[in-house]
Length: 473
Ligand SMILES: [Ca+2]
Ligand SMILES: [Ca+2]
Image (tube, rainbow, N blue to C red; front, side, top):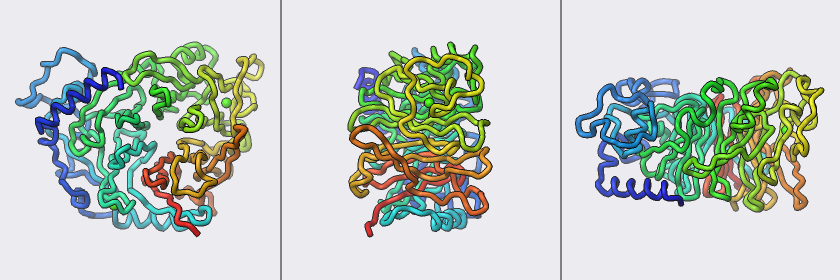
């Protein structure tokens, strides 16, 4: 652990010893009662008087008397008064309320009906784990208390299974006194520091599994607002980040480039910042460098626990027909490797725009070519003991499903096995979220592993997280 985090944790412990950290928490002590009683089919209900969604993320108009603003010497978060106060373990004003999500009723029942049609290998079962609006990438807390779920909107959800029946009974927004922008990518360090990669900022939360009970959560900027990419390059497209801590202890973040195929005059700027690539940095944000080049829009990566090497999905070029180019699951064996985009639109298929340009030397082609346009997103290596031997060490990955293919493909969970010689093969593991008429009944985004070895699968169309477990024959 570096000195920055050590200092933050020391300050955190001093604060909690003084018992001020939870004084302003409106959260009830027990799980089930924390949910707002059902009053209809709408899954999202604001706690209290309904002002929560307006209040969430907005700094108070005037600072509270017991914690005056402006007494801090250092600003870790220019332009965000709430983050600055939280970085100094100060309350933000106490006006924020949680948004809690109803977990039972007609909406949940509809999801359970859909899950009856999902097919899995023999011995596996799937069930609704949690109703989580806009659920994107997930980070399972190392203490097994909370699973944090990002969104492409403005909330991060904290999902808790308090009675340990493997079904969540509490879903509420995390750190509602902060204003998030596309907080898609949560990830944990082995020491339990939660990182959240947003569109153009990375925050860290020491002891997030401890502080999440309150609306004010100790928070620090690893990458301050506007410093992940040049603000002029911010786009509404391909802007959902994911992160992981590598075996080297560094923070890895995928940076999609915003175009279908970018213009040549963008490439130098993108290369410098790692846009259309994967960057890494120390956990305090220092020593940032580009680790991966030639990526279009990677929204899922993980490190093979056996080799320590990075594997990542990439979404490939649109507009070249239904059956090309292939999607990609890539395997990186050294820093700085180039994976071919935009000279290659996917696999070894050349893009029309760069057909006459010389590609970089030593392009690395995908380890596995996935179905064209299936939109491979989140992935995880399976390290649990619950599943049979043939699944151990395999990659589980989510396909979001095509958006512009004549016949839709994807909307399923894939399993990819890596042989001793490094070659890999993939096949569907859980499918059935596209019905006979081609209508999406769900769109998987990410796969994460619970401590018991079961898998969670997020779905941002339905707004849910599913759990898959092995029961045996
Ligand atoms: Ca439960
Ligand atoms: Ca490629």
